[in-house]
Length: 147
View (tube, one colour):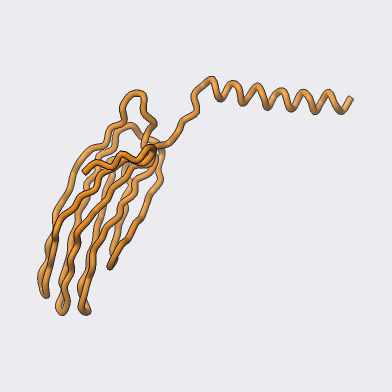
């Protein structure tokens, strides 16, 4: 399901994943996020998972590897959210591995994964030129005032 939050779009994946004692269950998810020509580039990736590990050994985990070399891992019981920032890119491939493990004396269950992409604003050349002009004006005014 798409998430259309301005400046932080993404996807929500809902599923039912369970593992009992001695069991492991999981899946892989691969996709690409591309920015339209007039859109802002991606500079942040966030992942949230909802899962529970029970008993003495139940565990829920996620590992994400991005095409720019960035990695993100989640290992939790309950709700966990983590983010990673990186140099802005226009295209980003995501390779995720999600698993639940019951272990020797436990169980684990998971039901949701949310991925979001933070957009980064890059100033346009006219804004930078105006900023530079303002700074030069301030410097000139300070020099004139000293005389």
